[in-house]
Length: 229
Image (cartoon, rainbow, N blue to C red; front, side, top):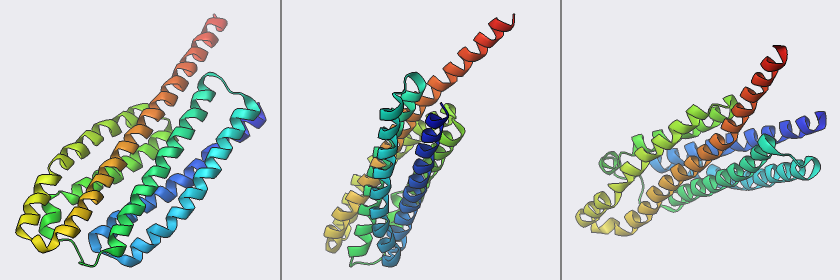
């Protein structure tokens, strides 16, 4: 039992490391796009290799735990959830890398501030960043209620993105010389929406694991109470 606990702790430790890297990658990617800072964009692109390596470490730790201890019930849910969350984090890292590449290869300079305001860039990226923080805290604190709030926040992301294409179409009509750049930028906005979708997936996996653990805890308390009577 002690060895199993140590393996679980290793999974959690490696997961926390990967989460820290991906969270930094996403926030830096947002900053790179907003400021057209190619130096920051390059840092994000370099981090992609680290994320890919960390994904393998977490996967291997989860697989080792499954093979060595054949967990059941809540512990099995934990391992399965970690594998799925790990995959979603890696994909979020891919999307951040895509944002960074837009900035790194962009020859036009900073995106028109008025356009960014119409697209609600600050609100969009701020909401996604908050979703990442809440997901991390929900895992650390095993708080399924907090995880559920992430799903509601993703609805706000989707609402903002519904207005993106009409806004960009209008902008391209007024600035035909920027059509190529704006078409590329539209993929950036879609990538941000996909980050929100992946965070929703993570939230659902957290609820799947945490709620089961809470049910086991309640059952244990009930059994202890009955035995004491």
